[in-house]
Structures are given as structure tokens and as C-alpha cells.
Length: 102
Image (cartoon, rainbow, N blue to C red; front, side, top):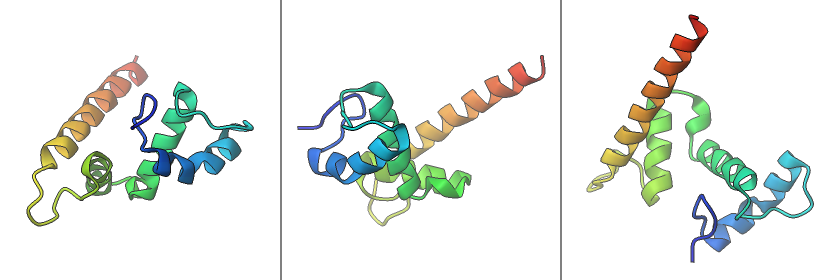
């Protein structure tokens, strides 16, 4: 039952729709609209702790996004996802650094 490009469960989407509408200035948030979905994902990750803007907080938020549990929770085997996300972060930042150096 997950919806749209970000695969939100309907109940989770409903908890974000007003914030998406306010952030984007739209009257109805649509989980199938890529701009709305990415905005929702950003808000959700911030709420999961990524807003702290540290490696650990962003990795932990990625794991929570993936499975609802943090990377370091006992018995959790989802750290691979947080590690992969942070690998992408490093690659993107390296590319930005190259472009800014031009």
C-alpha cells in the first residue's frame, strides 16, 4: 500500500500532508507528485534526526527511514542501508567539491 516515488504508507503521508502543502504553497499534497514526495522525504528525514547535520545523525535517520529502527539498535541488521546512503553522500559531496573548484 505504499504510495508514490518515496513509497509512503498512507497514514505516514497523511501526517505530513499539511506541512507539504505549507512548504510548497499547494492546496493538496499528492504523494505521486515527485516534488511533493521529495519534500515529504526531506521533512521525514529531518524529523528522524538528520536535521542535526552530522554523519551519525544522518546515517541513523537513513536506517530509521529504511526500517523504523536506528543503525545501532540491538539486533538490527540494517546498518548496510545507512552505510550505503552515507557512501552516496560522500560521492555527491566530492562531485560538488570538484565543481566548486572549477
